[in-house]
Length: 360
Image 1 (cartoon, helix red, strand yellow):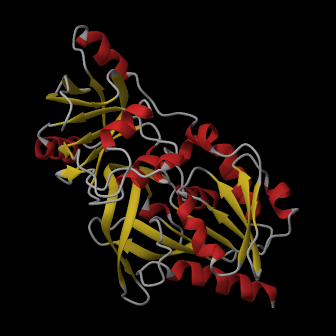
Image 2 (cartoon, rainbow, N blue to C red; image 1 turned 120 degrees about the vertical axis):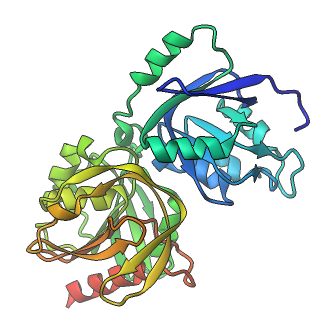
Image 3 (cartoon, one colour; image 1 turned 90 degrees about the vertical axis):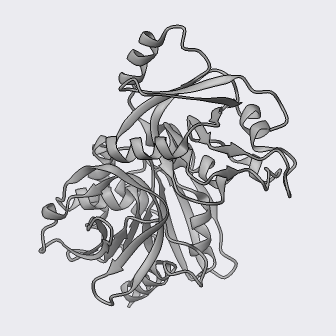
């Protein structure tokens, strides 16, 4: 680290204190503190809308050696704060260091803390709120602020305001994408398979969506608690009655499950990282998946008459995928990769197959 950072702290809601050094903007940032086990793609992580309202702690010991390029800098940072063990001030490719990038975006960061101690604390405590701060002059007031913190209205805050269109070079299908707040990289999985896309604000009704005559509907990932979005769930319920194939991931998966009568539960520590093992019950195929969520579909609430649980998390037996019986559709909890060589890109092919069958 080339500059001389000041002392800074991470204060958790139970009073646990970590001392480190300031990184990025100096000041205070409050949020839900989560850890991520990814070893790369820190710029993608910071700009991922599913981290809205959260302070992200990256467990990999050294972050930032590639720097931040001009292309990386075009994305908004969605996380409230960022914690690393050590950041690198010598960059291989980027025009800016990670520290400079955070400062330019007004993001409060922290480095130099005992990351193993923090990770153990988050694993043990589960859902934890906290604050990165450069001052403990009024610790009691800050603790009150931390404990009162909630993430609300997340989808409304980050969904697009106006519809957007992406035209495929050789259109085979037209898909309506419901934007609940998701990384745009996933759209490549549709485009490279000949899908033109209508990306729609989360507020669009089932009637508005189906008026566009799509071949399929994609319910995107997004942040926060699915139970906070009853209006979206009602519209999704209507979409299931229109005879249009539906594919959903992440938050979309959870809200689609709610639409058929299932329930959601808050997880102890959630799944965050790129190494979550998922098993397919039908094929016994094992997939290593990328995920970021703190909620899951309650297994006991899934009626066999409504849906089949066909994907399961190997670590904790949580629901990772549903096949629906009353309409043509399926959903997965993880973020599928668009790389054809990955173990999760098959979900795009399955959706294409569903749309093709619906045309017959």
